[in-house]
Image 1 (cartoon, rainbow, N blue to C red):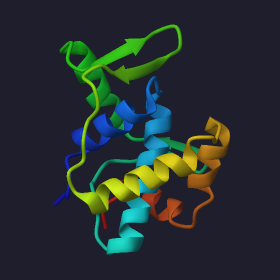
Image 2 (cartoon, one colour):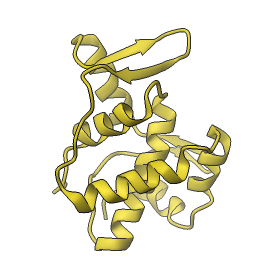
Image 3 (tube, rainbow, N blue to C red):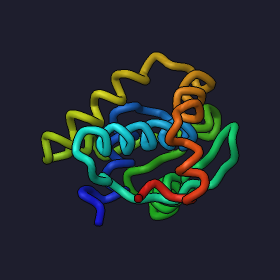
Length: 138
């Protein structure tokens, strides 16, 4: 059971980062999940991971954003910059323990380029286990 909906967590990340590609959201989401597990020894959210040694994607991230764009909800796409942004103000995470970890990971990764951010995830010893399981939950 997830402690926060994946949709809300993705909305929070996108609303904080501005125009962001699902690739970047996926990397941040993985790091948030690992950090939460380290601190609280439980899963924050569950999601699917498709990939190989050099990279991956989380289908649910694209699905949430595409569905939001299609329904003309809070997500909009910038086709020129190839990113999505959240137009309904900011999403709030009421649980302080969750918000603290999410904000910490966003702050830690904000100055990393996509290559360095990807490397941070795929070089982590937990990454291969996630690939074998094809999901983040244990």
